[in-house]
Image (tube, rainbow, N blue to C red; front, side, top):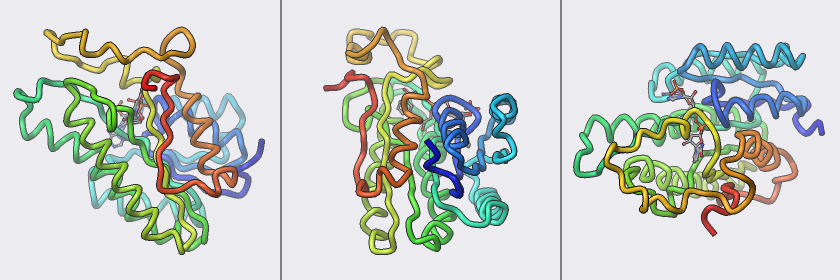
Length: 254
Ligand code: NAP
């Protein structure tokens, strides 16, 4: 499939997990990609894989902390200029931190909100003019099954993911007449840097986490399972999908 030939895509969190898998999927489908991440080593691995795949000539990587307003402004402007326009923004960057809510500091709370929710807002705000200029821009944001299904010890994380869903619905309505589509993916049980180290409290009650096993398959799925759905949503195959979220969790939450 070559659904992204001639299309320009900006992807955050492109140095690991689902963001990286999405970079490679869009490149494989002919797109041009700017991948950003706070993790420089992760971006180097993404570049190495693109070199091996023969797609590296359509990939640029830049280190960026999506919670840094000034840096986001600069990097998005540079990405739009380098690509010559923007068709799709994928906001995959995020952090998962777990804690008992009664022991959650304001600093801990604010850090998760700053990266997951505010970072999604900042990237979207800066990309919107270029996305609207093309007449059929797409924003793919990252919710999570934690937004609508209880995930103990992850209250701060879950709150950001619920906020991202609400934010996505609002912009979908606000810009629909200008051709913009805004959708969320809501993954769960995906093998990634994040789920390899969820940092649960040492005394976590695992009986509360019983609903973390997928009904399908033999366990967690690879990040490419989400990347394929993102490619569908961001391509013309998703042309009538906006203001909604799609759960991708192998039936963990049915
Ligand atoms: P991941 O492998 O940890 O990838 C996330 C990437 O974002 C990492 O490279 C991370 O860098 C980067 N990042 C962290 N803070 C950043 C910042 N301030 N600015 C820019 N980049 C930053 O995890 P993933 O599972 O692929 O996560 C991708 C998205 O999926 C996230 O939004 C996550 O919440 C969502 N999600 C995942 C699952 C799942 O089952 N895996 C479920 C629901 C939702 P560091 O490694 O240095 O932190």
